[in-house]
Length: 388
Image (tube, rainbow, N blue to C red; front, side, top):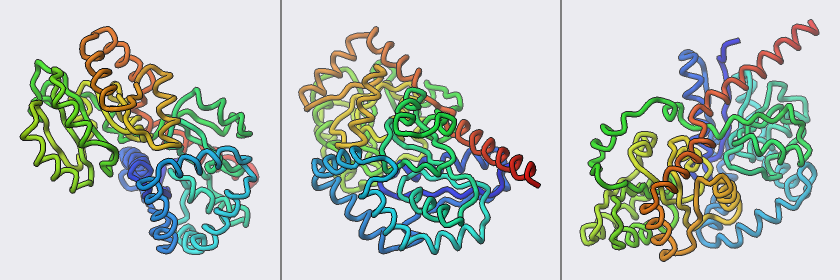
């Protein structure tokens, strides 16, 4: 059965969840250009009130008080995965506000399957299924290297997880093993295409004699990017810097004023659409530990030096990446310069970290995700025909 109508539900809390949905859409279109694929920023579509109150509060807490966010995240981790009070009450309120409009769209579109790249719309779908209103397969595509109880519902048909080592963690939460598929976090299918590194380095005016460090703060340009750039550029280290500010135009303008006065070679970019090419042109990365960005770096064989992780899921991502030997957490500016200097002067360590990154990298993750979607739909059709 060819994929023809797929609904992708996400939430624009940061950029990663929506980019994961876009990667799945791109892979489906690669196979069937005539398919109807809808990506919904769920709260923006279903209830502007939820978007304003819930997401506004969420982003403000992360920006203003990461410590409080980390505390709330860890408290939620301790609740029973299927019956935690906070989770049930949150999903009840979300469903009350958002389910009617979402149900109307589903009735109109009649999707073959629904994939959620954020846990909030997943809870709304489960509410509808419990009312007998969502018979099509429901999949949850986890966008971090961890599992959190807010994602977990017995009624979900399949979970798409970042790595094989996470399957056991999901089982420990009571999810049946046959429902868990280690596809990798879905990233742009273009990461799987061969790259001509020399021409890419020339495109970004990177000198062949020095290693290039990519400095990023995710699509929103969050984190201490200005301090990182200043510290690296003034350290005298034999590397050139490409900093991506994402949609943070204020940061980009600030760096453009600062960099001419720095001794190192620094390029300042805004939002980059072909990040897979820029990653292929660079040698290592300094930045945040968001699930999508980390997955893209691993798929590019790009070791990471991680700064200022958000307490909660980014801390879990750091633990996973460090355990794999593909990343290092840096504690402060002095530690960053020390770790990068140590890396640059140790070719063996460079090779080991790059190989470790490639081992856990999944450049074809979107392809694996779409394979699972097709299998679920075909299995459901076979079951329906068996009862006919």
